[in-house]
Amino acid sequence: MKESKDIIEPFLKIPVFSLYKNRREPSEKEMNLIDALIVDLQDVGTRVYTFIYTLSYCMEAAKKYNKQIIILDRPNPLGGVKIEGGLLEDNYQSFVGRFPMPMQHGLTIGEIALLFNKRFGIDANIKVIPLKNWKRDMLFENTNLVWIPPSPNLPTPASALVYPGQVIWEGTNISEGRGTTQPFETFGAPFIDIEKVLSDYEINNIEGALIRPIFFQPVYNKWKDTICKGFQIHVTEPKLYNPYIASLKFLSLFLKLFKKNFCWKNPPYEYEFVKKPIDLILGSKRIRKRIENSEPISEIAKFWEQEIKEYKKLIADFLLY
Image (tube, rainbow, N blue to C red; front, top):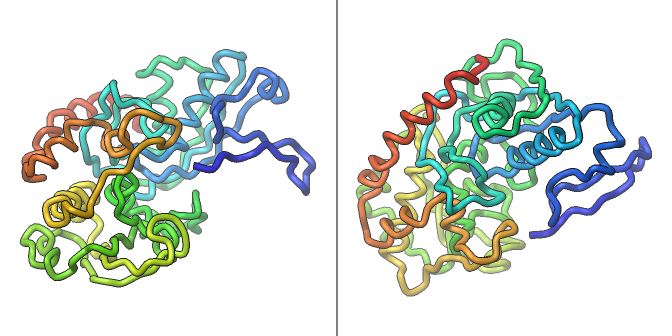
């Protein structure tokens, strides 16, 4: 985790204050420099992506220092229909999960701001500038907008499509493709036996995607300069593809097949120094334990069906589209 530094923007000569460091909330001194805070961020539709929590901290600061926040809404690149995964549990709150949301949350960033403000008690003075012509069943490719990578490792809409599942590799020694040109679409490790993986029924029946075996060599991050064996996910039918369940199936199989080499990553991870990164990402220790006990992913998924129903009720009043 490399923290960002405060700088003077070279063209406009204005100060830029980083909110990706030990202090993630704007200070009173910084807030006193502005009349209102305009938030223009492209979220990626996944609970663990930290932009929405930076937004929540800014909303809390706005409340504290009596400032208005104006949110310029942006499309959810995954659309606003599909919701996937169990809700974050209270004991696993972190910078990759502050509030009880599923892994794929189905909201725009403007809707998230409204949800945080009213349901989770921030109560700031906020205004959302809504999108024009966006519909909930639209993926990013349907918007005719230009994709500006929200971070270096989400370079394309295709990487965002798989991210709600592929982000789990950050809690393991499996490369999530950082250090390649196709992060998150690509994943693997030197010890993966491709033929064994492809002989599994569950992997061969993942709906909405083609799984291509590959060799790759990251230029940085995990397994730097080492040839890895793994896979690339080609999403062919996004409405059928369930990224979180698909990646959990791979995780379960890797744990079963490669126990001698597979391991969970140790802390620290995103400002948390005690809990396992995988538990923070999954939002629950119970999911990890159930996978370690070889429970079928289909059974684990039934565990969060009722939670998703309750979540849909929770967000209903804040849907703008």
